[in-house]
Length: 105
Image (cartoon, rainbow, N blue to C red; front, top):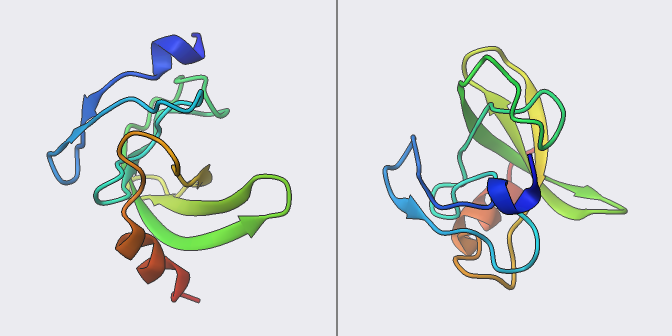
């Protein structure tokens, strides 16, 4: 599946709000409003997971190569994945939500 195919709008399964595609050359994998995601990938971008659980944002982490990321934990299977925060794009990630995550241990 190409990045262009993956970068589509969707309705968030957690908060129900519409989410627009990113405009910065990447693709959206979490809601910019509530920061929740879905467990869709086994390997980032492959969309081959059979789980489909809602992934809760649990904390903010820093990767020396990728920058700040949101660590998500699947409510169904417990899998954890890190996703780069969306900045400088249409519908950037909620700043207050990111600040709240940054205060979690």
